[in-house]
Length: 373
Ligand code: MUC
Ligand code: MG
Image (tube, rainbow, N blue to C red; front, side):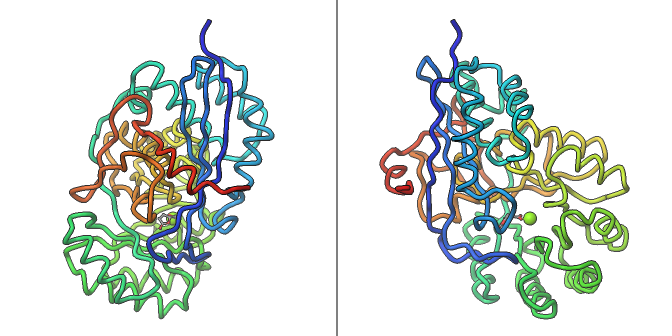
């Protein structure tokens, strides 16, 4: 008899950040991860993670809703089902539950981790095999203070940790944001690539003014300057400026990616397992982008080590990420819940090896940071 899914446990885990992380819609002092522990009838365990930013500030799923919706609706759809047909389980979840992409991503990650452990293969191997084993990783400067951001950037460059930087803007008046970005770019010069993420904060007219000034200051990439659903506006901005646009909130899954490309968008897509409901969904988006000649960027919702490792296994199957990745989530957190942290060096991170995700939980740390109720 092949193994069936026996139990699915979800835990809310709160980890403090190393410094306040300021985005246009929230400031984070702590990250909350929903950790999934799935066990099959042979005792094989699969780990997953569902993580968002700032409660409900980033999107329609919060850590608490992710946990509750898995416990109440999604886990019962999986319990008792054959554990090894991940495609059938994914289809079952999608047939019976709409939306909830982050919760589905956490479950698919756990299913793939368990499958890998069962077969003695890494998740990247389950997805067809890795084409990269060391992936570039940028750092987000978001302390809210220009000089502190500059000091932080030089530290990361000197440590050979990161050589590309993303600045979170959109919370302040446009002149203040532009001055902040221009000062950082002027300080770093040609030593580093500097990009910005506006997280939808501008309207199109503000974006035209802001992007003109940022292009002038030597910024390399403009991420999601206007609201997610304004596809036509994003295409107009992409056509208007030399500096490329990176679509993030505007592209959740392959369907969004197809629509935006078919409507004439050029630029790049931020891939996130959380947006696309998991690793297979995000690779569908990546393949649409590749067919349309749109560059790829490995994105994060600031997941911890489990979600970051899952993303790395997906990105590793791609021939290249034209804009690199931002898989630095674990480095923003003061502590970790795994025994062997990810290996960050030489401006990137190594793809974890070993079966499944290649990640082992530290049970003491997990117990310490798990929310009581
Ligand atoms: C986002 O919108 O890109 C990624 C890096 C970071 O600091 O925030 C995220 C979310
Ligand atoms: Mg973004």
